[in-house]
Length: 366
Image (cartoon, rainbow, N blue to C red; front, side, top):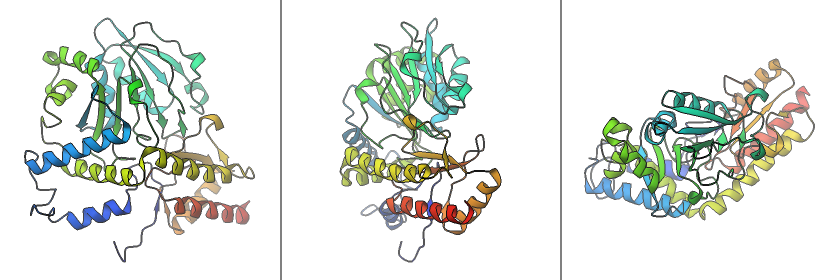
C-alpha cells in the first residue's frame, strides 16, 4: 500500500484491519496465486475454497484452543441474527433462558429471546446506565436453565468482563463480538460463543459460532421444526457450506488468523491490548478534564468511552480530531460522548498520537 496515507480509525466497526492483511488482499484480489481467479469469483464448492475454509477454522482452533468438543460454524446475518437463532435452537419448550443484562446489546438479545420463550433477567445494570457490570452476587439464576447468556464486552458503554461468571452446570453462552481473540478465552467453560467478524476477526458479513456437542444435539432435535438456515445442526452437518457462505470474508478471516499467530498468539496480543488501553485511560484520568464513563473495575480494553466537560466542547473536540487525522471517535448515538475503539489491529502508535492530541486539546481549551 505504498503511497497511500491512512488515518487512525477508532470506529467500533467495521473496524481496522491489519495493514499486512490488506496488502495481501490487494496483491491477491485479481487472482489467487496458482488459481487464476479472484476470491470474489471462486466457487464455494471448489477444493481451493474448501482448503481456505478448513485452514481458517484450524488456525482459529489453534489460537483459541478449541477442542473437538466444539464445532466451529461460519455463518451470516451478524451477531444480531444470533439473538433469535440462539433461543430458536436451544430454548426448548417449558425451559427458561437466563440473560445477564449488562448493556444495550444484551438487552436486545433478551428482547428477541422473549419472542421465542421464557426469559429471566438474572441481573441488570440498566438503571445505572450500564456504567458497570452486574456483580456475581447479584445474579439470580434459574435452576436448570436452558442457558445463561452474557455479553463479554459492551461496545456502546465501554465495559468488559475480566473473568467469566460462575453459572454451575448450565451452559454459558457469550456474545463475544467485540473482544473475541483479543485475549485468551476459556472455550471449555462455554456452551456456545458467537461473534460478528467486523471487530477483531475480519470484514462485516461473517459471524463465527463455536458450539459444544451437547448443544448441537439439542439443535438437531429441533431441526424438523426450524427453517434450515436457522438451524445450527444443519450448518454443522454441511460444514458451513449449506448455502453460499461469505467467501471473501472467510478468506480475510483466515489471513487475520495467520497474522495473530505470527504475533505470538493470544497471550502476546492481550499484553499489547492491555498496554494500549492503559495509556489511554491514564490520560483520561490524569487531570479530570476528561471523564471515563465506565466504572474503573469494569473498563473495556477494546472500547474506551469518555466525556468532556460540555457537549459543545465535545463537538469542538470531534472537529479538531477529524482535522488531525482521527476518525470514528464519536460515541454511539444512544449515549453520546467519545468512544475510542482500539481492537487488535489498532496500532499502539495511534493510541499514543491520540493521547498527545488529547493533552494538547486540554491545554488549549481546559
